[in-house]
Image (cartoon, rainbow, N blue to C red; front, side, top):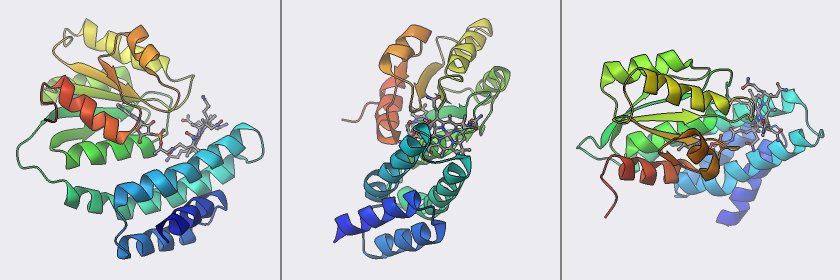
Length: 218
Ligand code: B12
């Protein structure tokens, strides 16, 4: 039964039917399905198929935009539910997060923000297409423990290195730890650019953030 709704959710994104994505998300929540499972088992697989179809030329940019619209509307319903399930009183640390310059992909970054906030981190989300200087200025202003950098394009991944270099120049490293993520990013890339860690998804981002601020989950 639950598997069926996951399949329908994925299919609604593949079909480019945001109204169906929203209705199915509401139905899954009403049926008591965990919000993270809705994302992991329904929405993400659907987005991956959309991405693959775009990658091989079967889908065009408007198809990506419609699918992203459905995903974002679903996320708007799921975010408050995620927060409700994970409240911590004490702040786990302060983070500045954004998608690097030239890159406007925001869905994954926003999911990381939601999960970190829900886990007690104070997250300052700078949005998308963020220049290195803005990361540095915000990190300084809020005395950040962590800077999180999202990049979804192979062409914008080097932007993560530029932010690390800008933090170095400003003297904020190594006090401020840097974590990187995004579909084309990997452990190897994180090491190459001198980041402190790589998280493959939002759950991994929380585990990593806790480790980097010296508060690993027991
Ligand atoms: C939706 C989408 C778009 C939407 C974005 C809408 C929005 N508001 O965000 C739009 C239509 C705008 C778009 C545009 C483009 N896109 Co696009 N897009 C996608 C798509 C289908 C899904 C991305 C997504 O939202 N995934 C769902 C989220 C939840 O997953 P995620 O982003 O990976 O995030 C998770 C992890 O990566 C990680 N994570 C992410 N950030 C961070 C940060 C930290 C610190 C950590 C620890 C973890 C972490 O945790 C997240 C949650 O689990 C992908 C395909 C794919 N499968 O990735 C292509 C894809 C990324 N796009 C691609 C391309 C080519 C483009 C365009 C260049 C197309 C064009 N010709 O114009 C433009 C670029 C625009 C720009 N300058 O940025 C390519 C990139 C190829 C490459 N390797 O470089 C992909 C892979 C599609 C493909 N197969 O060709 N896109």
